[in-house]
Image (cartoon, rainbow, N blue to C red; front, side, top):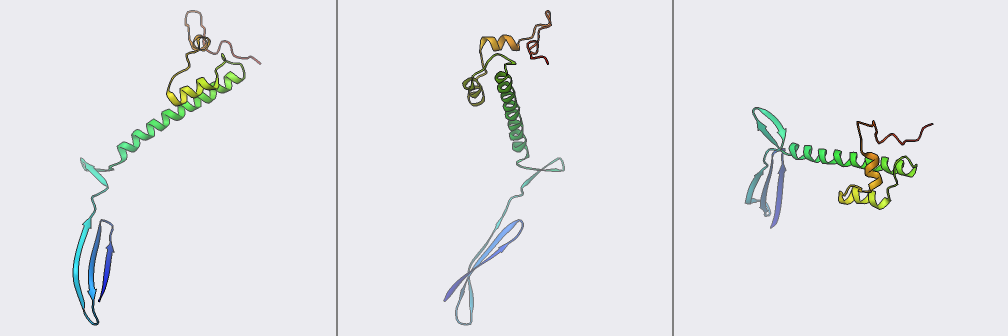
Length: 128
């Protein structure tokens, strides 16, 4: 007596059967099928992935995070080249990791824009 497991894999289901083999005979012991749910949702006749909305939200979060990283890199370069008030690595790391924007008074004044006096953050930049 030997037991044999047979598996049938399909695109939407998984079928299985267990048979008992004797010398010249096969006896079916158990059988079954698992049918998978569709991986898409249909709204108003339009198919879309069930994960599409979640993926879109994640992509938005990643995009905002990468924009923030580019700003941090730019501020680090400006600070290292004395084109803006000095910011420490700790202040920039705190902004990146703990979402606490640098509150250095000189930096806050530098980035402030005053339309009346036409002062912009770029007023003190290095000229060639």
